[in-house]
Image 1 (spheres, one colour):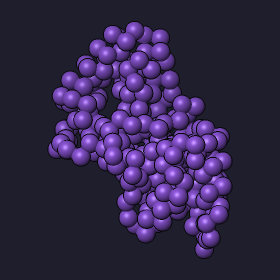
Image 2: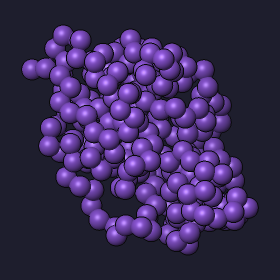
Image 3: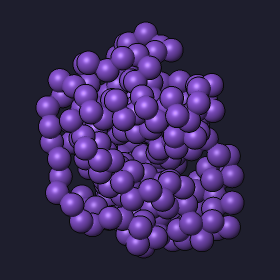
Image 4: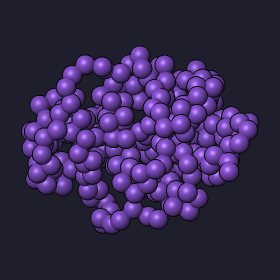
Length: 233
């Protein structure tokens, strides 16, 4: 039986490069490529891949994304191997990705050969961290696991800010998306962190990853989930 791999990325050039590389591997089959987290969840149900190679944050998504997506994959498809490709270089986000259940982690400045190695390792039940991701990861600090009750006390706007922030958006980027001032977004983020019991960003990302925190998206009704850089471009 071939190793079935599903690709999820909203950048067509990345998808094309990854698909071309993986199709050259004997015994591997790229069963589908999708461009949003909603499509990813649907395709996993339809094609039952062995491994998913996915971006962490896909702006065109209108469903679970970032930590929410990884938590959903872990919860509904526990046998699925997940390799995350990302342009994010914030070490707190990278640690959160691993804590949320990703089996492999690479930055998009990695060589395509490194992705092949990652898939081989993950298929064998091992974890893999790419060289460039390993260089930026913060290896220090204790894990933080407070209770979840604080998440229930967040206002709609605080939940909205936290959802975007935990998906890898910057404060300035969130302000632009929500048409609010940077000062307002920063205040709402800090208020949410106090309610969650997180005294710094490391604790916030660890909390979200370890507790499988899924914050509501105010724009959607809550429902079950639907069934080197030039080398990539």
